Amino acid sequence: MHRARAVAQRVGAQFDYLEKRRISSEVVEMTPKNLDVRGKSVCILDDIISTGGTMAKALEQLKRNGAREVVAAAVHGLFIGDAAEKLKRAGARDVFATNTVESAFSRVSVAESIVQALSLKATAPGAR
Image (cartoon, rainbow, N blue to C red):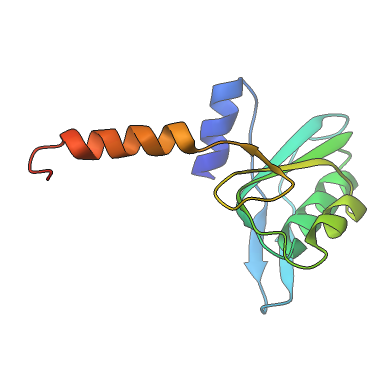
């Protein structure tokens, strides 16, 4: 939720979240919130897209709630097995991720953020 809030504030958009409950390694339950997505373009952000199951469920929920289009985004895009196809079948207009794990969807570079973090670390008191 913190990530979604930060991204939304940066681009001047509204944000909300879906409640996720993992039933087992294969089964995820999404609890709908009072999301006002009818007719809107929505971007759903998660930390990791692995097999695509959780993100696909979220996409389906948003589409059922009337979202006009949904884009899926993740910090770490693993895209194991048929994950990319799952997301497309669930209604994703587009999918993108950072380049922390290279894939066909790696369109956001984290290089500058890493350089900044390392620079701050190097100049901190007591740094070697």
